[in-house]
Length: 486
Ligand code: BG6
Image (cartoon, rainbow, N blue to C red):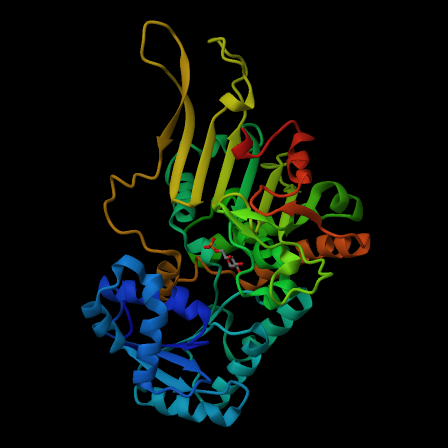
């Protein structure tokens, strides 16, 4: 797909945390790798009274540390020429006139509007963009999560945005889909004949998806307390990962071919009744502890958190998929803040050999396992047993690196780089379709309702641990344990 001649990437929330932490560093890297269209401009939009130069120096001050060692003043100078600024109060329709002025100078260009603002502003902004005549048939809009608070509010946002943008102009971002190992999982599953016959209930014992963070709520207390781990992580990132693991082979890599298959999985998730919520979910909230050797406060002591908050900072649950391929295979999902380590991984645990001829016990510890790691490093490993060199037949666990970092000595694109490229190229495969998103809300809502009905507090866990004890118990009831405990 060719790049359009000129392109304006308009970032609402242009001075915000995401822009500085992720978007500008990603665009800077694409610029350095000559992956941005020559004429591409980045238009920062915010309420602050800045001019172009003011925005450039603001961006440099705030983005430099996130670019890290790759920051080169000369490259930045070239990149900064692409940056312009428009002061807009998103709530005021007439404020969009100045944006229109900036954009109309390039009438043949393509416009991408990146909404990195509170979701409550999405409908107002898209309405005002339309009102100012800025939405053309080839314009695109990128929506950051969270998209709504529940099914009803996400529907409302989608309806409103849908009045001005067709579904194929809407890019709902889930940055986990942009991570290299997740795409490598697609490549391994569907580019090789080897795995497909084993990728089913007959050979897979369980699947574990963990996204554990060491950080707490980091200055986002007020936001986080209204959201919690279920809405912040499970409804989107973890369920999307589950879909990539579980979906049937799509007919092609075309956006709807992939998204149709993911949707089928979301719709096949076994619904949770009240009793299941009690026995198959664990929610926790961190209390004071230590992280990286330093004492850290508990969630209730963080800024912006009410002392009696019941918001969960940890969720573990056992999901099941009602299909012939997956019936009876538990998919354990787990995410939390202030956990022992920063780990994001998908673990496919295969069944043990039916009979061991080597005297090695046929236990889960010795069974094959595929580990797709997104954090702290991006790797894909296959755990196998091999013969230990020597004069006796002794088996030893080995890890086969399926990521081939050595074979491909090119720089990996960070998730936001990859996804921004896809938006510019018009490739929707790694973006979430409306029906997927709504199916995900439909599945998580009864769980959250069950927690509310139970009227109890999340289980406390000490910061710097792997979460409440109930999390291990969730697996031990099936005779299993989390990957790090094996
Ligand atoms: C975001 C969540 O979507 O993902 C944050 O809102 C979380 O709470 C972040 O910290 C984790 O992303 P990553 O890529 O650092 O694992």
